[in-house]
Every structure is written in structure tokens, then in C-alpha cells.
Length: 334
Image 1 (spheres, rainbow, N blue to C red):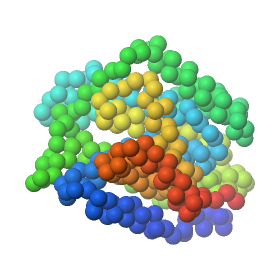
Image 2: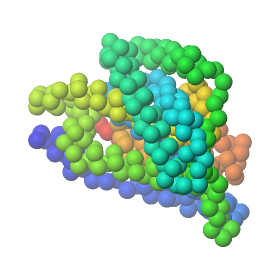
Image 3: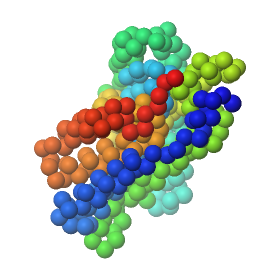
Image 4: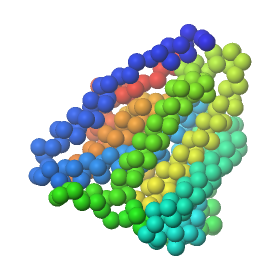
């Protein structure tokens, strides 16, 4: 094992961003008129942050490992959502059933369809669109934006131009009440799923050889290639995995909004790029912390100061970059 990969494997956790997330939650409490409202807003912010994290986590790896400016990431979100909705509508009776098992029997195939369809599109996109423009950011921006437009038009051809209503499973509709606190069931599901995805990614990146190679490739791709590993295959695998995560995030976001349209991926790309910049390019942990900060701040600000809600995330990004110019968890290039 090289010295670079040894350093990566033994790197210590920086707890300051974690404290920052907890600090935002605590500082918001005095500005909220009641404890039940604070709890509801906090869970809603965590759920929004988790959904953004799922959509953004794949792109931050692609940025960090492949140095690719992929503005077409939103297309993977939309295509994955449409693929899942097709499955959900075909299994509508199971979605409306009072049985949790039947609800999951519809949701799990839909999520799998989203991952597979978005991953397949990502594989094709990397081979046909991205590969000829490696190393040229200007061309990457142009061709990926063009690819996004083409994908949106193809969605219109296949599924139509109108929005499609997305049914939520019966057991994930409504809210749970704890005294005066009411929390939507779907938000709890989104928080749990986001945590599961983050833990799975952390385990893969920190406890497997593939994860070690990915992190080493982010730090020093030339050294990984010199050790005999085919970095190109690693690139393709990361791109496909990132696209699949975008598709999974797309279906979760679609059920959250209870509607899907061709532009939904593009509409969240601004938030995704803000999260990636805040977290640090190539950092999954930074992406996770950044997504939670964005989700929490958006909900708190939207309630306390609605007029500042739209600009709150931009302000957050500016403040973070003034404090840590390379993001919360910077991943350096050797």
C-alpha cells in the first residue's frame, strides 16, 4: 500500500462540521415560538437534507474522482423518477393497501427500477458524451448541458410533457403525533433512508478495497494507475453508481412532491451544487453535512424569515467558504 493510501485510511474525523449542524438546530430553538413547531421543522429539514444528500452524493464523487463538470446529473434524477413512477402506477393497488408488506413490495421494485435505469443512462452518457471531453471543463459544461436538454425532450417523447401525480404508499401517508408534535411519516422514512445510504457509502468507502481505491483515486489517480489498477474502470463504476444514486434520489424526491415532471432534476441542481461546494468536492461526509445544513436552514428560515428563504442557502455557502475556502471536508489533490 502506498503512503498516500495509508494516510487516507488513517485520517481522523473532523467533528467541527458535525458540531455546526447541531449548533444550527440548537440556535434555531429560541426563534421558534413553540417546541412542537421546532421539532416539526427540524424533522422536515433533516428529511429535506437527506433527500438532497442522496441526489448529490454521486455527483460529488464524480467531481472529486473524475474532475467532470456534469450538469446533466439532473437528467439522471428525472429519468430515475419517471422509471420508478411507471412501476408505482402499475402496482397502484399494492401502494393503496393497508399492508406495509404490500407497500414495500411496490416501493422496492420502483427504487430498483430507478437505480438501474439511471445507472444505465449514466453508463451510456459516460461512454458517448463525457469520455471525449475529459480534462476540458468548458466542453464538459457545454456537452452535459446539451445532454440534459436532449434527455428532457426524450422524457417528453416517452412519458409526455404533463406532470404525473405520484402516489405515496398508504403506510407512509399522514402524520404521527406525539403529544402536540405532528411529524409526517414520509419525512421519517426519508431520514431513515438517507442515513442508510450514508452508512452504506461510508462502509464501502472506508471498509472495502474498492472504497480505498476510490479515495486513493481522488487523492492521487496517477499513483493508483502506477500500482496496476485500471483507474478508467474505476471511473466508469463510480459514474454509474453516482447516476444510480441520482435515480434513487429522484424517486424519493418525486414521492415527496407527489408529482414528477421532466424539469424536476434541473430544478434541484442549484441546491445540489451548493451542497457539493459547501461539503468539499469529492467528500461524501462533507456532502452529508452540507445537505443537512441546507435542509435545516431552508426550513428554519422559511418559517422565521420567509423573505430571506430563497437566499439563505447562498448566504450559507458564502459564509462556509469564507471560513473554509475548500469546503467542510476538503479532499486535496496530490
